[in-house]
Length: 493
Image (cartoon, rainbow, N blue to C red; front, side, top):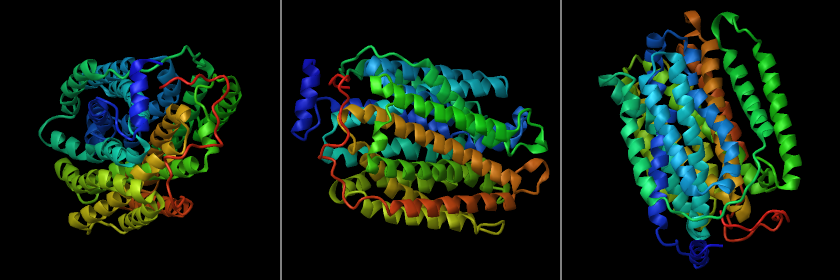
């Protein structure tokens, strides 16, 4: 163990952050914010991109779903990456990939190249989030993790929430390419600053990468999402029936899980599934998945479509309409985190889930006569409910795990967040298209209302699940039932 690693552990044991921890976390949070912003920055541009690129609505939404799906495929490998490479190496590779993908997207001559650019962006983004969460669990003492995770909420939730606002402002005065040109210098700047500041020492070990597991993961998540999205394609001209793709995806995911269970006996799993043995982790994971379906699918995709296609608001107004909710979500981060440190998750998550479910059902009552003011009020309620849930759930999930499972637990959580967001986007766009009477399946008022009803049902399911959250959080206590495998070294990550 290095002297730097001993200093980190000693400071954490005293309940204080180690030297330079604030600077390291600031670099990580700032970089992640710029990257996660790109999940939804294109959501208000879907209508413009459909016309400019000559593709359908269900096809153009792959610029968002494809981004999320790529993250879901790459993130499971981060458990391996965090053991094999240093945090500095991972950080530099992440920002480099993101910058290259941003440049490629800005120069894209058509939909195909633009999608490739988004995929490259997502490869860089996917590695950043588990690195950020794992670093927090290592650098911040347990008694202060809630407040620190509240800051990370700004990255994970606020960035995609304000993405439509920034996208709408850019699109109102400039073309969609400027959404990438304006982000590129920020990414390059973050890369330069990180190259100077990112000096978090850690021990590494040579662990084998199971390529077959990576392939199973890609086939599983890709098959499920592609099959789900294909259901909404107009004309029924899909070369492969959607049900067949869904079946292949389900089989591949089953094979992935079985293979990980076998490999982890020899400490060679791509993604260690032992976190699933912890009840608190599983409950928090399910709720987080439902939360991200609503946040990205309903809040970031369906709402801008409703504002533009039903209320006929321009892209700038559509972006401004979701800004108050995004600000509320950001402002709640640290206060909710401090409340979690004091009271635990249950007292925050249950009312938050109730507010989320109520707001989604209120969205289902909107029609062509509704005012933008009422839309903003409902969206603020939605973001307030999600804000009360997000920080407690993330902190509760990771704090319930022993130290040697933090990297794999954060990878599992980040994977499920992106898969849920991608599923939410695909489900709601598909439902809106199938339920619409407009030619070509373009979403109209009826289709969007149906999509919001589906979101309301998901909200009720989230509320029911929130009742299983335990009454107190005890992050300081070790988890006795999840033991470190005998073959795994006790290195600091």
